[in-house]
Amino acid sequence: MMDGAEDAVDQVELHSFVAQQRHRVLSGISGEGIPRSALVGIAVTSGLEIVFDTVKCWRKYPNLIARTRCSFVVGGLESNRAI
Image (cartoon, rainbow, N blue to C red; front, side, top):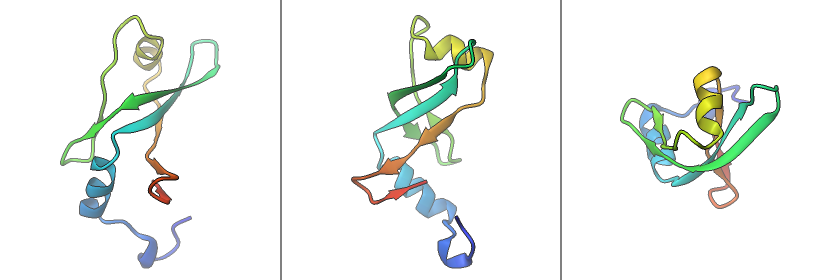
């Protein structure tokens, strides 16, 4: 939990951290309400938008079109930090 200025991450630091991460976990919910997660390759824009690609026949595509809310796990064991 972030409770003070010492825990705050500025945009430059956040961009640098996310840009170093090549593969991250994308999670969402299927049409049946089942949690779904997938390892995806990512990139990040200067505006801190996470970008990834997929193909229409993979289940994440129709799930994200129907339900746009999702989450990413960025960081982890190798970085000793997650955001």
